[in-house]
Image 1: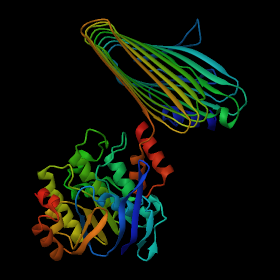
Image 2: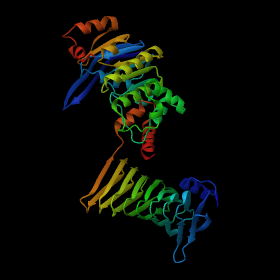
Image 3: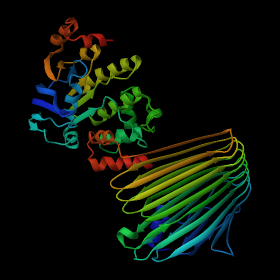
Image 4: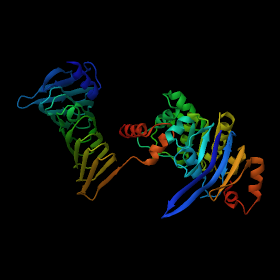
Length: 308
Length: 241
């Protein structure tokens, strides 16, 4: 692995060396390295590009890293990764994609991740998207279109943290979830777009089971002439609780559209949506300037804090 | 020393000029100066002019012999002026530790940040990682605002009605904080206040009413006048705890 790839890996997965436990590192459309453990198996799919990850019943405290890095220009990478998590597990999966595109051609990664979370299992899923080079710096576009399909069995709990802070010129992020009885899905999205970037996010959560619940929270910052669209749909099909919230800071000549949608198909569904878009409050800038920061420094602090 | 020379501030009020501050001149060199007077009289505007948030229409502001009238908020802050807001600002995502660190102007340890919070009577451990958001009460935000000023340790510290919006119990603690600051400050504290107990610890009292400087003098001279002159400063006597 070269220095560029190591740097990408550090940015998306926070790892600078070979991680402990199970991992599968994919570089430029091919397997770079893999490790499995007693409880976690990773198998290459035979019928299409991608992997199956099998986590045994009762696996607790283990992590799986599955980063994807692309450092070639003009590469279109499409993978199907399926995560089969057994019953009574408590595991963390760290995914992410980093593109370093210093050429003039488009580089893209479309990851289709499907999660099957077993009964009473707890899963934390961390996903980071990061790009270098790209349209602004080198001419070639960095494109990522991740799709996440979530199936939560009875009594299971999943927390998804998805972050895209820098360098992705175009993204269409689709997340679809189906929740069974007593299951919970928490989603935290952090997004920042700059330059002429485009980001579309669409969450659809079906609260099918009794006492299922979800909280979908997005915080985003749109700078320069970038464009963001946030769509969040929660369907309450049983006695359930759903909340979706989008909070966006808009700067310069950017545009942000927030479309929260809640649909109750049961009288016992309790659903709430909130959406707020606004520029940085003048008094926040003034407060930090009275502490000796310049307006630009104040802005940076506010944005960093907001996305933290 | 801070000196205001012939400060006037005029705003546009539906097409007509409205003079909020009218030719105010004064000097502040004492450790603890209270600015008081009726609501709407121009006190907060004057404080914001000192901090650089508003630019005066005419007049000069002199800090230790240097004309700072044209300096921005940031430049004045760096010259040694601090300003505590009457309504502290909330920040989603920024923590108490973040703001105290920004106020101190350098990386500080958790222990140092905690020391500033303890000064204002907050149990630091409970607060240090809290976000400055709607989960904090008005009284807590006020104390954090004051802790930031203590962390800055500048030569001029301006407080705009620190007692506004806090309960009586917190107020008693607040008085203790200011008494302590009075003893330790290396410079001048300027407090806009309606509270007799704050006026009582001031070395100098300035009365601003109708945008004008009504009175200026030592506490011993001004305070008795205000307390007895029922017609002159009724707002103040009504507000006394």
